[in-house]
Image 1 (cartoon, rainbow, N blue to C red):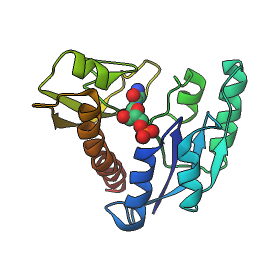
Image 2 (tube, rainbow, N blue to C red):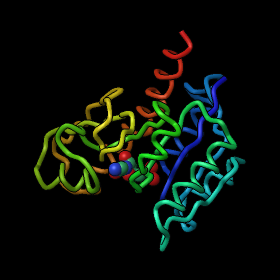
Image 3 (cartoon, rainbow, N blue to C red):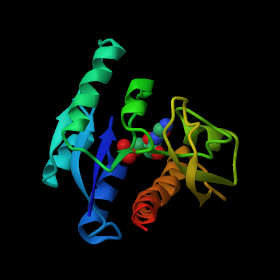
Length: 192
Ligand code: GAR
């Protein structure tokens, strides 16, 4: 049984889907979530995590220099000794010191094909460009913005999606199952 830590900054719907999956879905008996860590004390997802009985930690990033933030983040994560650090709507760029400390263990979900779109507002980008489909990407995190090695991609059908809300709804529905599938894939490959 592996142990993962989830990073969030806001709503936490992907985090919630992963938690549910560890309880009664495809991640059951695969991994447990030892902590949910947020850089934002106001993140909605913190309440959801606490309601699920998961330990939560806040490492504030606001009005703070990135070195002290990174140092505290490393210290906080080391306590849990995670096999995997799962970024789920975590909206900060991790510094090289953090990436080196947990090399090869950090993954992210991006709501677009990272070869075509990086950074924020990926659903807006798909909507404004009237894409018929977009791709959810799960990738390893390196020092760049959404430039790490791709673990897997899942297609989202956007045909006749008339509003941004509809684009997001279809995308999130895919994200919520796909992330757990990719976590399982990584963990089981490593165990072989
Ligand atoms: C998700 O759509 C996630 O893919 C995206 O933010 C949303 C977070 O929602 N992440 C990024 O854009 C990262 N660049 P959630 O907090 O409800 O999981």
